[in-house]
Image (cartoon, rainbow, N blue to C red):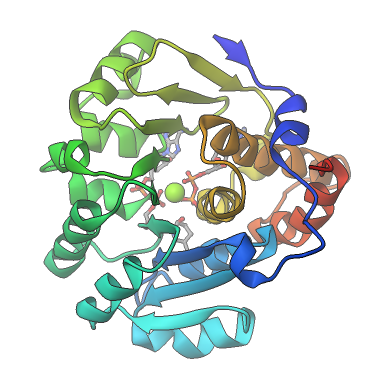
Length: 283
Ligand SMILES: NC(=O)C1=CN([C@@H]2O[C@H](COP(=O)(O)OP(=O)(O)OC[C@H]3O[C@@H](n4cnc5c(N)ncnc54)[C@H](O)[C@@H]3O)[C@@H](O)[C@H]2O)[C@@H](O)CC1
Ligand SMILES: Nc1ncnc2c1ncn2[C@@H]1O[C@H](COP(=O)(O)OP(=O)(O)O)[C@@H](O)[C@H]1O
Ligand SMILES: [Mg+2]
């Protein structure tokens, strides 16, 4: 098991080229948020925008539009009740992030399955939160996904997907479960204290020992999903990019926790551009 260090950030985060425009930094579609769980959509979208993705669109419940426009005017919105529009937009982006705050409905399940099956090899798909409930009946659909995939469950979500109880979630059992239903371009980010990263079909496990109990606040994982989406939109498509996103998320929270008893997702988000600048390397 290899421990992640700050080197992962300097390795992944590059300075922005002078000759660049919003198209240079990737297009992201987030599929997130229901009427009751608006915050998850706002936090993941905000984190993605603050990470520097070039163009960010959020497909969410129409009732959330005003709140989203008010909190994140940089993001565009699509109506989750118009699945054809969402599926069309999904073909035009580099990264898709699916799950935070979604309602566990048949319509969401249908949409997620279609998004997974129509994804292309050059795309990245991040799967989080309610998406695991929606996939629990049929995780094998993930093996048919042509895109690179990042799964970000916490242990209870991983149990829903794999049937492994928390005390059964050993390294070998996790690897076996991952290999049994994923394609060979899948990264598992098994969140917790600490967080472990697994790569499908490869016996390599990485551990992120950073992080603090100050992070144990609703929305902290939704924030990580947005950071992952922003990182994969801009940086080389490789496990190191996902590892860097995980590391930065905890590193920022640790910095804030030096002077703060609790760290809120919105505080982490505000610090993302500062943290990235600190570690950015010239090409
Ligand atoms: N403001 C918002 O709109 C929020 C929306 N959220 C959304 O709410 C939906 C449900 O997600 P939840 O994760 O809250 O609910 P879940 O029912 O998926 O899981 C919650 C349970 O998992 C346990 N758990 C989490 N991490 C664990 C760990 N490391 N070890 C052991 N047990 C652990 C918790 O204690 C809790 O009992 C998701 O769609 C999520 O995105 C949440 O992220 C909270 C904030
Ligand atoms: N005590 C802790 N120490 C380190 N990291 C933590 C701790 N508690 C929570 N985290 C981190 O916060 C995030 C929580 O994610 P998640 O449970 O999905 O939250 P939510 O769904 O509410 O957004 C994960 O990245 C997890 O590693
Ligand atoms: Mg979560």
